[in-house]
Image 1 (cartoon, one colour):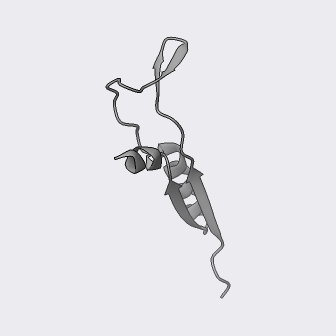
Image 2 (cartoon, rainbow, N blue to C red):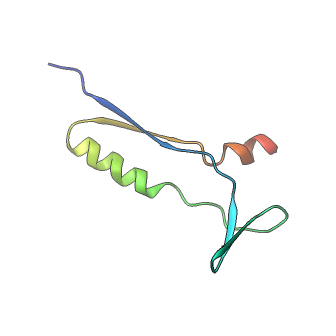
Length: 69
């Protein structure tokens, strides 16, 4: 039997921004709600697994915050 094909879905790091109306501003010195998990990638991974692929998600969105502590 052939080995399962693998897929890696990556959620890249990005600065945390505060969005108010149509403007974005960096959140330095602001209290913000923590980012949500990458649900869009979770849905894509579920679909990939349903068709027989092995799916993994690499979430790098909080790496910058972790490194500053």
